[in-house]
Length: 407
Image (cartoon, rainbow, N blue to C red; front, side, top):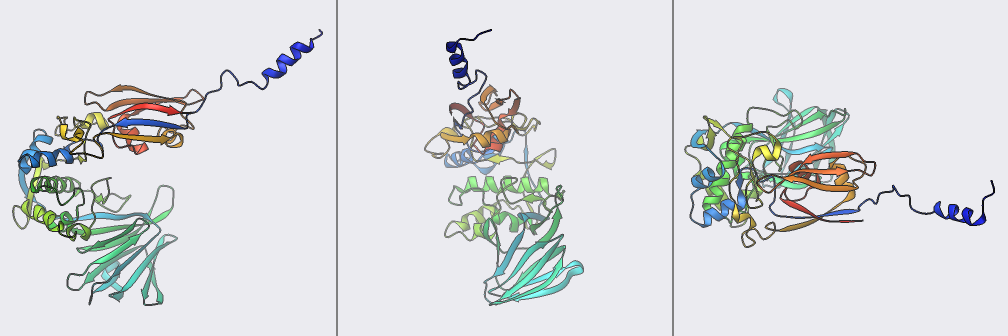
């Protein structure tokens, strides 16, 4: 069969035209929403608003936690707080005059001591931790071991702990360093601060500004004590700790909190005000046990329930109105927010190679996104809870709308 020149030209041209099935992949996705955090339990912005209106710490807690009791429980247990996770190195020093830091290994055997303005450095070496001392310009490898314990002495002595995330000071308890093996077979250093929950730990909670009204500070102190008590019975092997010092549990910033210029004393006074004796503190309970007293910065006008956020019911974590969170005067940063998220981050959230289309499937009665659907360019479809999507993409909250995509 003879093909005309005009038909050949048409066929050649089609080779260079876009394929009909090709999909344009967005480069970014833009969201608009309100609130910050998971929104379950006590709203910190809401607690501040209630305190400004004259509400007591107890009334604040009973508003945000449903069906609970407020009572005194023993709280002098030692709590292990992770202050350095998956570290390859860490440095510990003191600048307090006339103070010392001592390093111990198993069976409380002292292996080294340094004076003020000196430091210990620890680094992972195979499955062990190498300890090096630095005094002036002199560096000396002391020993290697799987675990070290550090204690310090001297009037009002503090130690500075430096890791890749920065430097913080600690005053109380002792610090343990342990070599921990991950599921992938790699070894890292886990650093924990062991100290008394009753006061030493609570003095270092950095969840809310110390300038807030006393009732809001006291409500936070009680919620933080309660949350910590609910975690005290279990040591997590992944961190060698009861809880983390970050949003994985609750913010613990050590001596930096109580030593804040001018305002630090107000936080310390709030903690003291929630102590019912030298060995007990005020706690939020249900059936006589401390609840897992969840809290977050703010909501989208209605707090979230645990079952909506995580799929597991908590009778104390029901939804209540929270209008303060969407008041721009009370919550200037998060009453309304806009975020643009890259294709790479959204695709990683769904564990897909790419996301061609994104759709909010439905919402909860609280206004949060219940389910969000992504479809890849290959047609693979994945559904996520709105809270899971928020957590993986680091957008402020699950109260959001998808406003645009950029291709």
